[in-house]
Length: 104
Image (cartoon, rainbow, N blue to C red; front, side):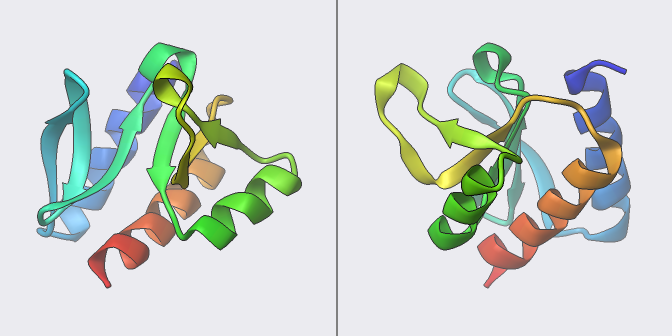
């Protein structure tokens, strides 16, 4: 399954379970928000899943080799993690973490 198909499949599951999750746009592409807060996007220039998490958690996941910094146009977004390899279980868990973070 492609990164985009996996992301939108997970998005549909999450949206069905939580009415706060909505589709929106960011950087001229589709994304998910929790209310007015950005949550995640997919495959921005080959980035796979890009999800918003606490910066300490992002650093931990990068250190563990699970993801990479998200740096569109060379500027690192410290609360955003890029996970290029599609993995349903991992991506869902990270999206759920992101929902908790941005909803707080």
